Amino acid sequence: MKTLVIFSIMLLLSFSAFAEENRTPSPDKKETLIYNCRETSCSAWIETGGEKHFFFQDVPTNTVSAKWLTTSLAQVSFSCGSPCSVSFFYTKGKGVSKDIHDVLAINPKRSCVLIPIDDGIATYSIFGKIQDPSLWHAKYNDKRFNFYTQSAVIFSTIHAKFDQDGTLRLNFTKKNGEEAQHKVIKACGEK
Figure (cartoon, rainbow, N blue to C red):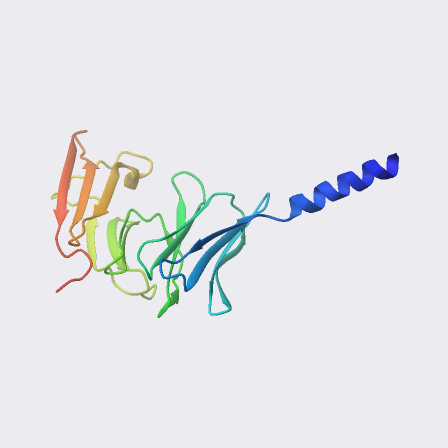
């Protein structure tokens, strides 16, 4: 009886050691986003043409999301606390992007993201180099916006999205507590 109990426990533990893979095929079915999470960590990769391209491996998180933004652009994100998040992107021609923190908005057509930076918010090319200059930038102390800066996490009072035409729409709290909106044309370096 004791042997049966020990065997049952070992069998149960061995099953729990394997994580279920979450698979999301691309719209054209040529690539597949895959991630799995165990008790204390997650890994994510893309399979294409029999090859694996890792976004990350054994990251200490249990909150991962993966989706295709277009037929060729994928995003994999994980939580690193509140309101912290880290995103990676993939496209066949450029591979896996660098890690991008706290993405506020994505323009998939232009492969551009809006993110918070030390002194404000800015747009960057998803597949650009770390030292590349921003495509557009607004400082937190910019009088045109008058952002509310008394929050511990200033960017948490800013909500943004890109319209189909590429216009960046900002919804934010001003210093006086009022809600405001602002449109930015050509925020992703369009000529």
